[in-house]
Length: 506
Image 1 (cartoon, rainbow, N blue to C red):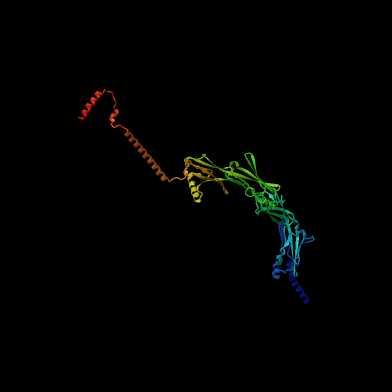
Image 2 (spheres, helix red, strand yellow):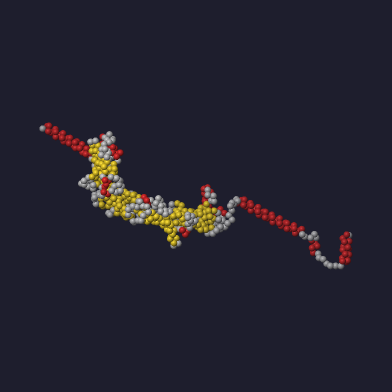
């Protein structure tokens, strides 16, 4: 009786210990089932690793002879499994015909306990339960991984064209009822059209822009609390740069209007590309053809000389395959109009008016007087000097109350916006009587005084000379100037003259 009691005691005592070892062995030999969600078209890695304890028992590295067998049960565990990939002890590899180019093992990692299956790219028919059996020595290790596929569909398919209606839908292989689908752009949910939650799961973008490109994530929520998501990169074939670019050019200068695609069309397998420019000027539509260039994505328009009549809106149209996209570019021309045409005389009141065609409303103007010698030091001195000398340097109108010689030269009107300097135009101011160099004011006064004194001296000399000349021509006896001749008989007069002479002698 005592012997039976002892046996029963030992049995119930050892039973939990034995059961624990059996359960531990199962957990080591077979890993728990995992689930992996992957977007269709991307790559998937079905994980299968030995535990750290098993690796320590194997001296941190497995033997050369390892057998790995991956099987798939299809969409349900009740379906008959079929071989996906098998690697024998000899290293010979067998692959299912439908998955041969897409499945692989990282053979160098096998001896480190990594038996993960890689599938590139994943297809919708790859869903199902995958099982791996690994044999080495007398050990057997197994893994179970369920692969679920999320499908993101775009209509029309890539490339998505700018300003063309875009429909995006998202669904998965999960069997439960779909409760809600949400879309997030760049992982920043907001109230714009880029974030959308609905029951249908379809997101529509009426006019896709380049700002809609980038990373998108669709999130699916099911009735069994399962939440799955997939991330994809949306590529939009459109134009680089701002949506409505404006090019600022000075009247009389050249201008280049940009037209550059966001991607090379050949990257999408498209080889038919053509571009042309058009401009409505004076009621007449002008067209410029651009030659095809498959190695470039830029189709600019070069205008050698522009004037106010060339300003306005230009359109660049690019045909890619059977679809076309277009972008409008505005040419704004900067001009200077003086209040006095031609050379300006000193002392005149002058206005220089800087005008801009097709203003956007945010531009402002600044005037500078450029030094004839374009050195940094001289330019800085000239600019600061003129800014102090004139009060209206900021604004479209430059006012010079009294033109002087220091105002001669080139004046520059620059157009600025929030992003910085946009363009500039120059005006050459010519002043009548302008001299190459002017003497200092003190020396100029001395010269003027000397000239005045010289002229006065010459005038005095001339007056004296005239007086002397007049005196030299006068008679010796001024009293005789009033005498006149009378006809008298000769003899009596001769006697009278003798009598006078005698009287004089006495």
